[in-house]
Length: 75
Length: 135
Image 1: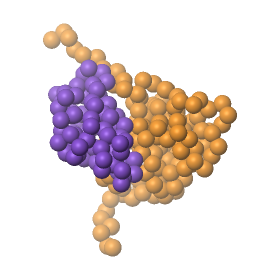
Image 2: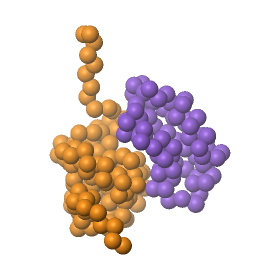
Image 3: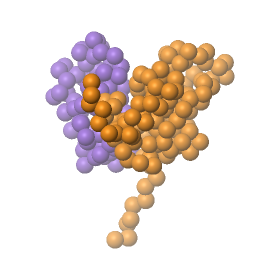
Image 4: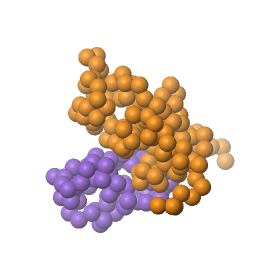
């Protein structure tokens, strides 16, 4: 079961200089909310920013990670 | 471009996206949403008062699979306006609150529309789940 801390580390490992907060919304290990602030988002639309984060987890989204709610910012 | 493989579901999805100015793919229906994220997204559209088409992805798992491959977006709901993916629940909610959603949909938000996206259901809430503790 994925943990909030693991999700945070994986996003930080995949996106350079990202500042990440992840909360487990239900305590059940499958509904998360992530706030991701990354310099590279400056050149991206909001859709692209969210895609970039979703791509870190691939098919896990909708599987073990039932829901990952996102808030993304460039700075 | 002759890679039109036989894929009636994907073709039907493409056609529906092209045919409706505003179309929401969701779990359940606007009247009976089956997931908090879908409920919240539908409620934001309702609050703007513009008619929209809604597709329930639950009856056939292939709808969701083909839609996600087509849109390169892994989750449901997905809102399309004028053939373009606008986003899922988070983006739609943010855009509702900033006024951008009304803008992309070409409507004036009604004067009685709430400033915050209406919480039709707790967006983080998982579907009702009953654990078997008898074993």
